[in-house]
Length: 259
Image 1 (cartoon, helix red, strand yellow):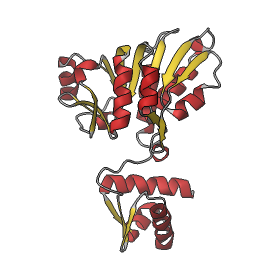
Image 2 (cartoon, one colour; image 1 turned 30 degrees about the vertical axis):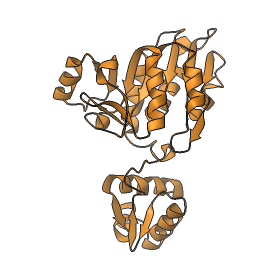
Image 3 (cartoon, helix red, strand yellow; image 1 turned 45 degrees about the vertical axis):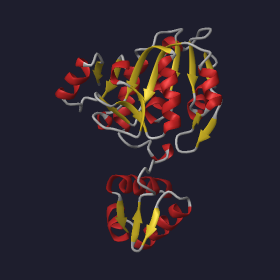
């Protein structure tokens, strides 16, 4: 196992459990305790965990795992969701994409659609996510509009009043949201209030709103609200979503697509 893969696995375990000791982590990853101690020390230097005697704990109560360490979580579900979301976008539309692992997969799914291989433009993509803009900028058939703002290293998203200024001047056919949580009562939410504010603006500028979220995020709450559930037109999720959950969203006026 490479160091990057090992760090990713360690951080995912830490977020899941809140605390890890050296021997436990070594057994989980089938490596030596000395390797885990070294990994914990190096991750602590990057302020990605807090070192304790014999182990590590998450970095604060509102710990947010950086995007580069979340790509493997629910990967197959996210790819299926992304393909389904991409299929809901019509050629020539203006599409808003928030940051996140699932929306990044949506961008990739749009990039390989054969009916979007040409056009002037085939799509207009508006995003505040640096990584999404970077991936799609090489597609000459797509018009890429990147908001201004200050970059958040956890998510590669631009936030703040510079981004607000751009979004206030445009209209969108569809906004595709990646969320930390979506609940019928509490709505769609993000971990960071600045990201939530930009995502909210994208929703307000769009004719329709699609949330792309795997089932682990449904029925959950997060710190910063983006919009009410009733503001979401379509939820695209995976087949592990429960029937009762589907019914509750549909009663709130949300179309649920499970893939």
